[in-house]
Amino acid sequence: MSPTNLASKHIFREIYEQPEVVGRLLAEEQGSTAELARAVRARGIDHVLIAARGTSDNAARYAQYVLGAINRLPVGLAAPSLFTIYHSPPRFGRALVLGISQSGKSPDIVSVLAEAQQQGALTAAITNEPGSDLAAVADVVVALHAGEERAVAATKTYTAELAAIALFSASLRDDPALKEALAEAPKHMSDTLALQGDIGSMAERYRYMASCVTVGRGYNYSTAFELALKLKEMTYAVVEPYSSADFLHGPVALISSGFPVIVIAPSGKMLPELIGFMAMVKASSAELLVISDAQDALDMGRVVMRLPAGVPEWLSPLTAILPGQLFAMHLANARDLDPDQPRALHKVTETH
Image (cartoon, rainbow, N blue to C red; front, top):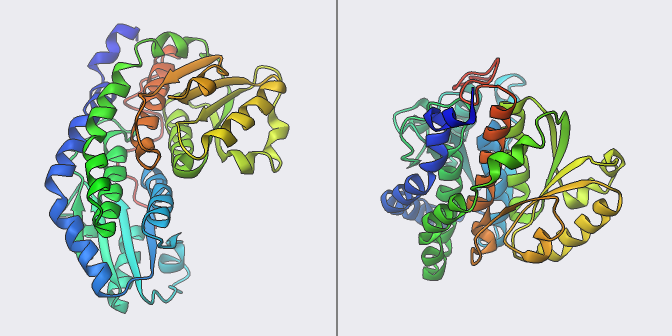
């Protein structure tokens, strides 16, 4: 297909719908997130366990940082096979057990919340399907309001999940400044999309790329995982996500001349560490692709994807993933692949 046909693809439209989707969620789900925050306080919840798969699991990684840093809650990721295969579920104690799933259909995720409900734990679901099986076993449901997502690779439901997590965190902290910052997220997302006019030509350079790594840290550890997933789904490249710290513990041996390293480095507390990391891998002749709003970081990139200034670090995953989604879509197009229908994948994957 030619690049001019991309505008007719579902994924193209869904990527550009994201500011509207997040704005709708923020308007509609104030009540549900406030209800969940009240229940957490009333029941003395002291930790969170999240059940999720795929893209939703990457949103859960964001929750680990947001709920940890802003709300001081330890957040763990569930092992659903303990429930469905080993039949040896852990004791939840004073946990909030949160299921995140676009479809709300996967039996293993549903089983985690069902067991939590049986144990008397507080349960909640973040889903695009409020009438789903997952929602039925949740005490509180936060709906994504994303509308039908027709492309197989999730885009608008992912950022809606991030926004739902951020809204819950702000409600639990009960800090008006956090909610005011979050209310600006749709505008920041629109501004980010408007900055990506050259991304199609950038992607052409990597038409024959067989492998690369994505690197982020802190709040954008989740972005590294989600960008790697989008590239794997749409382009079939072998892409591995890392934190910059973990990358130095062995995987740095992957670096050879011209090896692509995609670094997500928005302004914030992690920026100095990431700039040092980029200097190190650049000295080893890696080819850097940089997603950032900071000029010091952008100056180090062979290819740069610019973010708008002024986005708080805790909300930067809502904007930082957008250039990555577009890059994956355009790279698939450059490879004559259909970004709407990756091979061997289905929109709803039910695992046990």
